[in-house]
Image 1 (spheres, helix red, strand yellow):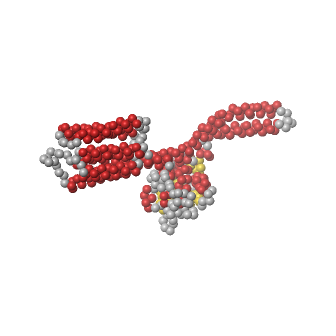
Image 2 (tube, one colour):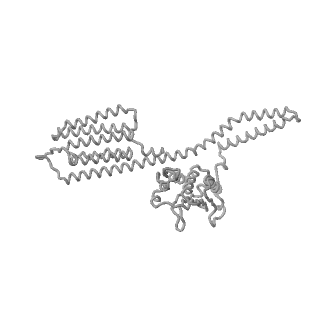
Image 3 (spheres, one colour):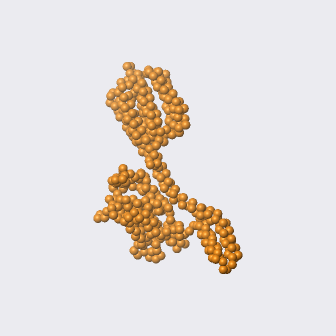
Length: 444
């Protein structure tokens, strides 16, 4: 839910909107004075100045009242931009309506809302701007212009200006919303990826803790060993405690050896702990789901006609990103399968190929076009279970998995099985020289 808040929350700074309003006030004053005194057009200047002064007063009040707020809420931002639309519509009503060249500025609040506020706020402000544009298109105080009796524009021209203004609002608003929304989606996806990997990255801290434990416990164990050795030397051979003292000394030696091995793992790593075969990793990924009585089969082996030494099973580092990504894909396959999920791995001299498939309904044609992008979920197509209110998915799992696997060097392919088969498949291929440790050591 926190990632959805990243997408819906406001990104509008109070300082930004206050500064933009001061720029608007300055521009409105300059335009009013220029038209009234320089061009000598007659219009209700007193009312226009009052409307501009009201914006200045509201700006001062907002700045002082909310000076401790950095980011405005969607509600506050909507009210502030709604006032800007109404104030600008009033000025346009007093100065020529839709025929005023500055009528296009009605688009500005829509663009700001689309880029910074939520979708509901943008729709609300768009409706308000549409009503304002419609009002000043057919009811306004005309400017005198320079012709005798004023300049009369045909209705078709005013209608054209109204249509062009509405089109500009729709296009600029949608474009701004699309760009800003994609940026927020990517930010949320990155946050989700970092949160997912944080747990795995904590495992690396265990190495440091192991080294610290070996260093901290080394001295007490040495003391225990020396005391036990002295007691064993002092006790007579027939003493019943001699056997116990000998056991204490041997266990102290064993503890010291264990701590030494932990210290070596922390500084140099342990090959057997940090590496696994392909089959072991697939079994590790599938084991939690097998424990839930899910029907999952794991099959590994070299491709036909693969010659030694390439027929040996690849050994790779236990990359937390790969394990998490495979687990997520397998979990999705199991969730959509009807009765069976298959994990098949094969290799040759050049590639390691892994296929995860199920016998479920497969991917829809619409989903295949967008699968792999953030916030594209297949769970919305699932029927809600009895104990769930709705089938909801953030759509980040596949995106995160795809990103992690591609970062490890894999190429991903996904689709649906050809008839008569049913279900979806995900195919992963790694260059064997890149991740097979055994092959790297052989070539070295």
